[in-house]
Length: 130
Image (tube, rainbow, N blue to C red; front, side, top):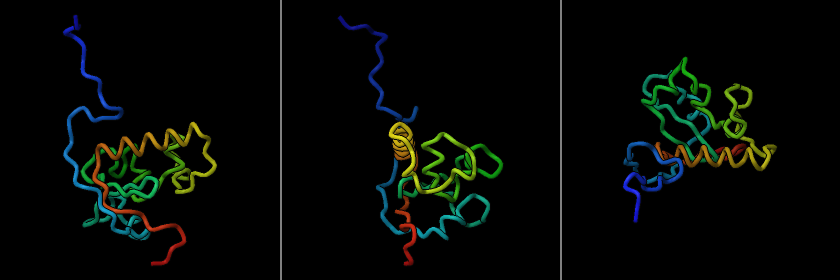
C-alpha cells in the first residue's frame, strides 16, 4: 500500500518550476568579453563561467549590480564557489588548491547552474591568445 502523501523523488538541484533550456553552445568566449558581461555594460548579457562553461544569467536579479551574487558576474569564480565565498579576491578560475570536499561543492554549483541557465559557450583557456 502506498502513502498518498509521498512525493515523487526530485532530481538533485532541480528547479522548483521546470525550465526549458536551449542546447548548450560550444562557441569560444574570450575572457575580455566575459569581463564586460558583468551587468554594468548596456548591450551585453550578464554571464558567469564555471569550469569552462559560460552561463547566461541575464535578467536574474541576484547577479545585478549591488546584489549578493554580482561578484560572480563577468567572471569564472571557480575558487569562490568551491569555498562558498563572496569575496572578490576568491573569484578566480584556478581551483587546484581546493580540497576534495570543496571541489564537490564547485561541481554541485555547476550542476545547479546547468539546470537553470543556458550554456552560451566555452571560456577561452587561460593564457590562450585566440
